[in-house]
Image (cartoon, rainbow, N blue to C red; front, top):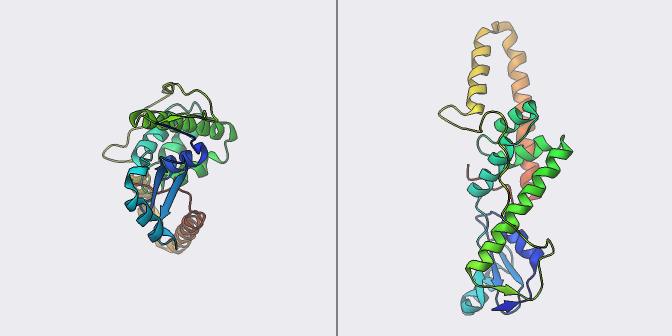
Length: 219
């Protein structure tokens, strides 16, 4: 089977992880059909797929769990120890993808290295998926030849989220500190914690509004 493939749309579909979205490769045209729950055309598109099921192949995105492992391996390769420690904490718990990217915003070189590494892994995933389904293309991918990504060298202690994850250790430390603060100072401490909580909620709301497809955590 040979088709002219919409590579850019396929890449977006592979990296997208949303329980409300499914993407299909049209085997007759090479175009990508994305169906999102709530979209006015969702019902019509689903019916079109079901009535022509042989012409459509559901695209298998790189799972959130798999992409989380990519982050873990990248974090383990960061040479800057303070940054590595911040990243280890950032990927602990729900919202890991968003926090991870937020930390890297202040480190453009490492941010670029992450995007390059992640792109290589996505392209390798796409190539394996196409080969698995025996799909050949008449047009080459815009990113060129894809080789198996190199393993990143581990630096410092490994990224391990064991019985007490880094985030929980910090929460325990915060609770211990609260116990030592005089009662008269507690209103100030509580007000500051409320400020941090509100800022976090606003950041999460902004991320949801922007609807970043890589931010649907399974952790």
